[in-house]
Image 1: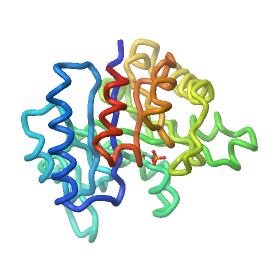
Image 2: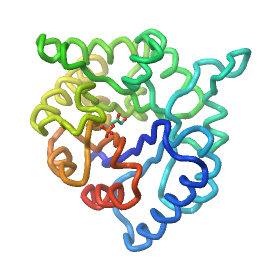
Image 3: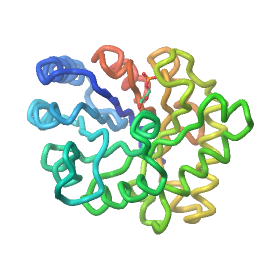
Amino acid sequence: MRRPILAANWKMYKTTAEATAFAAELLALLKERGGGQCEIVVCPPFTALAVLRDALAGSPVELGGQNLYPQKEGAYTGEISGSMLREAGASYAIIGHSERRQYFGESDAFLNEKVKAALSEGLKPILCVGETLAQRRGGEMASVCQGQLAGALAGLDPSICDTLVIAYEPVWAIGTGESAQAADAQETAGLLRQWLREAYGATAADQVRIQYGGSAKPENIAGYLAMPDIDGALIGGAGLKAASYWAMIQAAG
Ligand code: 13P
């Protein structure tokens, strides 16, 4: 049984004051929860990580970074290392978000270095893959997504499956309000798991949690979670408000 994981990717939103207010609201809602199996991960801007680490201490909420640089330290102006993320309270790192691929030209080979760096720093990677609308229309969805997976995971052995989370985020569904049909998201998630089975064997592959991302919200989350190969969501806009994030957490149990 894979534990569902709902991760909020805040992107470049929220000051530390706004993050603190969100934490207070979420903590108040969590008090009503009394248990629950779903894993809750907030990925704020770097500046809010340590603030949230302190505000959420003792709660079940975990933290993730939105990116990392694949070196331990050095003259890399503007970058952040895995150990810095760990120190600031992160246990996850989002790697290969389509916005990083699109605006910062991140290649699969570079993302492969980042996955390895995350693992060596004890961070669990949330590896994002997804096709553009043109690729989908061109019938390339499976080859693009599986190719991104193969590139980012090159050289890694089946033990990657102990910690790996994959986020399937069709680019055309991100921030557009136009979410994928649950059955279509399942089809891709199934293809990704099939690739993992062939690469690492069924036992390892069946451990990996696959999230859907792209206009996921309280109104559609249950449909995704009901799919056999979808184990949660990577949430943008709906993860910025404690109330809507909370509604999704409740739907995930
Ligand atoms: P939205 O939920 O705002 O579409 O963003 C999805 C996303 O990119 C999460 O990483």
